[in-house]
Length: 424
Image (cartoon, rainbow, N blue to C red; front, side, top):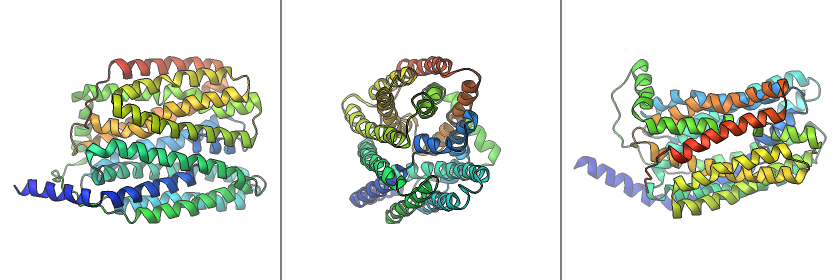
């Protein structure tokens, strides 16, 4: 009876604060996305680094380090999350660290961007790696926290509409970045951009501090030593074959199958000699189509279910890959990016909901999140480095063929082998 009363009080508190928390979370996400949309790592930052080096391996190493640091350490956080009564304090600390990176990068750009570009590039990579670590940790904390302030039956709609709003502000940020970059010459213009990103993102952090979080009522498990904890966590792979299929499919559709897309902007730079403004427009198109996708997939998920929407979305990666190889002009590049944006938007807005549906219980969710991100991390991370090595040794056509093969296998696993129990 006491346990039922605690659960009822917990759910009442969630409902009582739902409107406030929804408005704050939407505003926080929108403002943060506006700031980060000014310099997406996969497009604008990659293009920026390409001005300091011609090595495809070094350029590919940027996203490798970022993704490796983002995903791999997350399994070590799951054990800590299970013990916490409140998640917001940890998330706020990680949020400050994330935002501070852009301030430091802005200062370093003015100090070293011209005078010592080699040292600057080394420090740039170190700071982006650190950003990956704290961002990865915070993504776990944010997801668990959000799953506790939004009722399960509204979670999918919450993520879809929040992602849509964030997408609109993100591509608005990309448009604004063009004006900011025109304020000065390279690389000082990027220094200005990074500092502006920091300042705007701090507004979102302030809003995040106002969220009202209920105390965690899940009974704490007995303290486990690290060996037992990791053994039990890895044991999920043996007892949950469906989750293993999900991981294999995601490793291919989200990692190895996207190797050629990692160098999409660099290939366009080499083949079409695109300008900085065209590179910014590529980011804008990507973000616009992701926003369209958030709305589109939200409708499909509501009417047909999260699995059907996923089946359709992964197929769009194939034309994105093939159009990039063909790309006789910048307009075909824009079309390829549009396909990629639509496909990626499903992963951005529904991947976490899909994982919640695959997790057998609320108690095990932190373990499933940590295990997914840690095991998939190397695939998401090293695909860009491997792609750079392949590209330096062969050519973009060969890299495209490999990407299509891996992507096709991942798509077949997702469509025909993965079973999803939807918690709606």
